[in-house]
Image 1 (tube, one colour):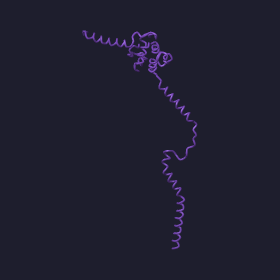
Image 2 (image 1 turned 45 degrees about the vertical axis):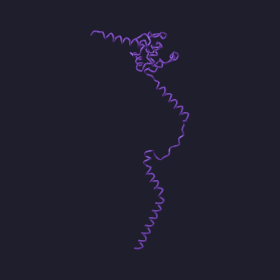
Image 3 (image 1 turned 120 degrees about the vertical axis):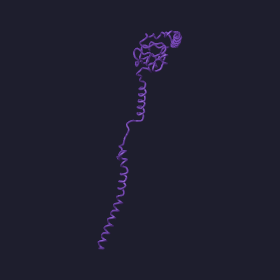
Image 4 (image 1 turned 135 degrees about the vertical axis):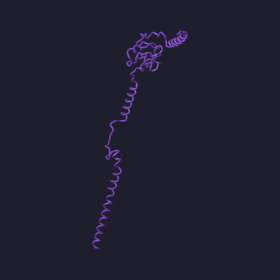
Length: 191
């Protein structure tokens, strides 16, 4: 029995010795397994283990800068689109005579364009000082309320060399006098 016990003890010792050798030789594998377990969620989220292939850019820095400048110029021209013609009218009115000759007025309707080209300097100055809503009404041919500027399609255009029959300051004074006289006349009305 003692012989059997000694044989079992020797077998157990050999087993644990072999197990120790396997465990020591298996430590790097255990480290790799532990690293795989810890890094698995990160590989799922951020992409997995294979290194990226080598990338050689085909675009140089000056090409990128030039492309950026072209895109910036294109974006700047995009903001100058004037579908209602307000900015075109304002630029035309505020420009001098030499600059007006070469201006593009294609954004403005034909009737308003003809009237703009035949208006005098006083009328153009009054129109240039008007707000965007008044200029929009001018281009549309509606009553705009700009003193000294005719309504499109209502009045016959005044030739460009002639002066307006009444400048805007005279018109304003005339309108104020008319309002005051109307109030005075209405005071004595019998109702």
